[in-house]
Amino acid sequence: MSGVLPTYNETALHAALKRWAAGPEAHFEVNVDGYVVDVVQGDGELVEIQTGNFGAIGAKLSALARNHRLRLVYPIAVTKWIVRRNPDGDGYLSRRRSPRKGAVSDLFYELVRVPYLLADPNVTLEVVLTEEEEFRHYGQTRRRRRWRWITDERRLLQVIACHEFASPADLGTLLPASLPERFTTADLASALNQKRALAQKMAYCLRKLALFEEAGKQGNALVYRRLTS
Image (cartoon, rainbow, N blue to C red):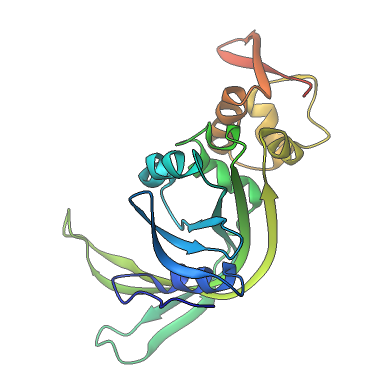
């Protein structure tokens, strides 16, 4: 690999995933069409690592995808260790495993911000399932000045699995086989064993990508029908 990893305020998780994603001929932090791109692979593919808000980079992704193949890498922690630091910053109070386990379907919490992303044939979304450490300290929040445990950083321990989505149809593979022909978001949440809030975001995205269509109402709830691709 060539290029130098930046020294600006980059998170440990972002830097680790950047190294993980880069191929043997990759360059880091390259200016492409007026945007700084995390990684440019030897074959010209652009790679952007996003550990948070998709909406913050939506315009950037759309602009770059007009003329380049683009891969968006998004990590979801299936195993997370919560590490609480001592107030004096010397050592740690505890390290415990979080009961929360991420799933591939969690991607819809962010994809809902840019639902048309995979409609662009130049864009591939790579969901990386990880084991991470999350470091916290006890302090006051900036806005309300309340005392609580505040996340400082996330660190990558290992990549467990990867799931690639290169088209809207690929997202359809996340739908459970038990889903009936017509369904509400409550049905979808039950079939996924996830919260209804996530099912609502998933339904919104897949309707925008022409994988679902509205098929009436059941009480106050919308009824959806899956479309054949």
